[in-house]
Length: 265
Image (tube, rainbow, N blue to C red; front, side, top):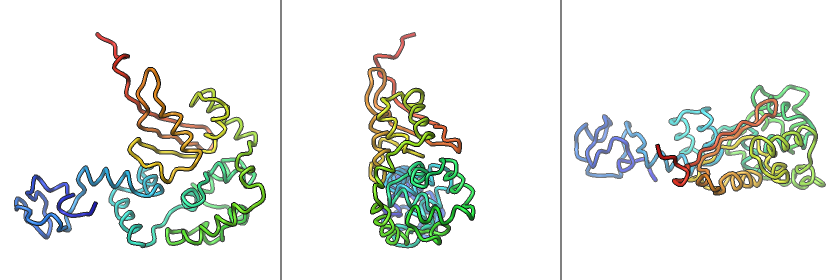
């Protein structure tokens, strides 16, 4: 979809209700392919953009880190090949397919150490540890854009060439095992073997109309499990999940109650 009269919120059945520099207010729109300086997204365009944008941009918008206007501009910039700034942790998830939990396991630190690095910045004594552990140049820890993705792909190759790296990623230090047990018993109520996979998820925002592209393998397992149909509910159509600095899960889901379970009053 393109930003033009046909996708503008001020297009009322072919009549312009905006105040741009192409059509005057109340004027008939004769060419739907034009765009003015007062263009605003229609609901259809907004929905398309917020469901098809790259994962790291959707997350930034859904986390309220950027406004819709900023989000939309960054989507355009990304598709035009212009550099879009992002967190190194979002870039690593997008390119490597690993989470902040995985990073903590690889570096042999607690989740809180990685959480602080993302939210507060890298302390001096940790810079080399993060750079070496992720096979990333130190400069990219502080300043990374989408134009660095090619370099990060090379870093990814080095990272996954490490001996036993997949075994390390799946390992369960005490804090991660405790997280898995809490997920299994209280938060998701799933078998422990699934909880150990879900414990690798640090942050997740999903709607049923989102493409599964861009989600990590552990996130797909999580989504598949919670979105299954049950006797009482239709499949879940919305999931929000994140770990706080103490590695405690927070989860919110939405599902429609089946008609058979509606009570008559």
